[in-house]
Structure formats: C-alpha cells, structure tokens
Length: 185
Image (cartoon, rainbow, N blue to C red; front, side, top):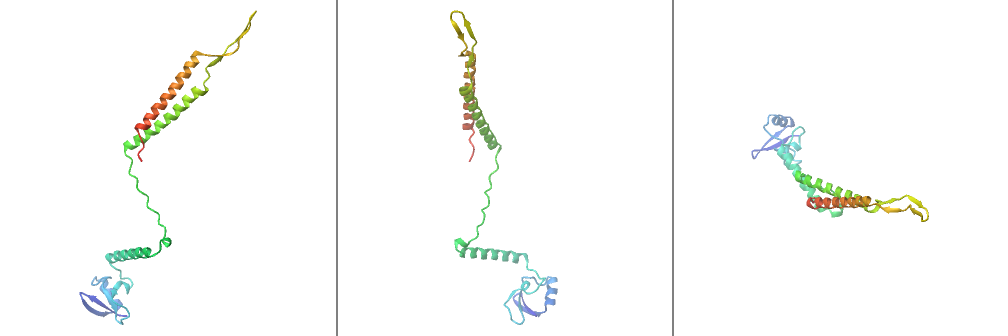
C-alpha cells in the first residue's frame, strides 16, 4: 500500500513503505508527519500509526498520555460514585522534628516517668511501710507479764514521713516538667 504525505501544506506522494522508511531514516520526515493511504481507506493521521519502526516524537507521546489521562478522568466523572474505584490517599508528609521538638518530647516523657516513680514511692511509704516494732515480753514478779506488744518507733515514723515527702516532691517535679514541655500536636 502506498501513502500520500502532507508536507509544508502540500500533498506529496504516493510513497511506498520502503521509501517512507528511507525518508524517515534520513530525517526528511518524522513519525508525526500526516499521512493518508493512497486507496483512501483512512483519514489523515500521523505516519507512525501506519508503519512499524517509525516512532512518534517525544512531544506526541506526551500529548497522547495527557489525552489518555483526561479521557480517564472524564470516564471516571461519568461513572456513578458507587462504581468508582477506591484509590488510597497519599500519606501526609510530617514535617521533620527540630531539636527543640525532640527536647520537648524527651522532657515530657521524663516528667511522666518521674510522676509514676513518685506515686509508687509515696504509695509504698504511706500504705505499706510499717513503723511499729515488736517489744520483748518480761515477767515481773508480783506484776505479771509486761511487753510483747507492737509499739511505734519514732525513727521508723521519721523514715515514713521522709519517704512520703520524697514521693510527693517527685510528683510535683514531674508535673512541672510535663506542664513546661507540652507535646506539639
């Protein structure tokens, strides 16, 4: 089959496929040059649509991709919403943390840890620390048995007070650290 070409607004030809390949190789024509079969079986179209091994230019390929994209968008818009494919959203890029943000997060975390440790210390000394001691029992003639009971020890009571105070100080310090270094949202 032979083809006519539209070159510089003039129709030339007919050319055989071999002649067209030779002219293409010599860069006299491009894949985008309009061609029409000599028998009139088709309208004017780019030459690359008729002949193998003749490629379109890069600009034509980009135009075809853009056209295909716009056709896909129009096709999707024409579909009812229930028939549209579900496309996963791209994750939102989080901004990089600055050293100040990292310091704040670390101080906040340390403050929370100090609060928990303070609660544990204060709770132990308040609820479980025993301040009483066992005394020896003695038998006194004429009076009977004396002692053998549990009595409060002033030194242990002081330790209990110090333990509760240390726990409460830890809670206060941890709370201050958390309040002064809030997490950014």
